[in-house]
Amino acid sequence: MSAYLVVDIEVTDSTTYEEYRKHVPALIAAQGGRYLVRGGRTKLLEGNVAPNRTVILEFPSMEKLQAFYASAEYASLKQLRIRASNSRVFAVEGL
Image (cartoon, rainbow, N blue to C red; front, side, top):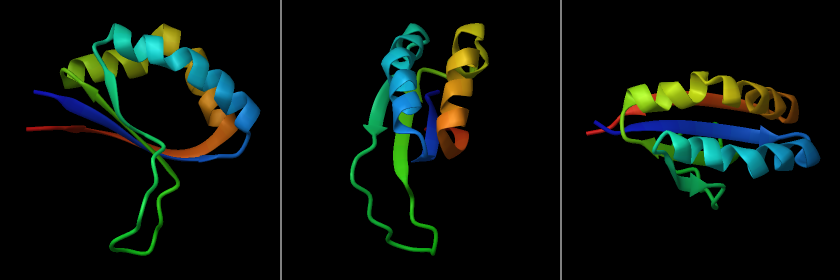
């Protein structure tokens, strides 16, 4: 069953975030992941919290998603992202 990593991110340091963006795609691909959404235009339809930059990744399974997120290779990149942004990150299984 596919799993999705959903991120709502407010970039606060674009230089550091750009360094993160250069290196993370290869790690995502190594676990069979792919981008479905990467910062496209958003429009709030309901609620009162407008999204910032939205990223959605698809992985073949929750295990592959978690392998990416918990990997030693991603740990240092995750720290770059944390320093360069405020974000909400969650995983959800698909159908």
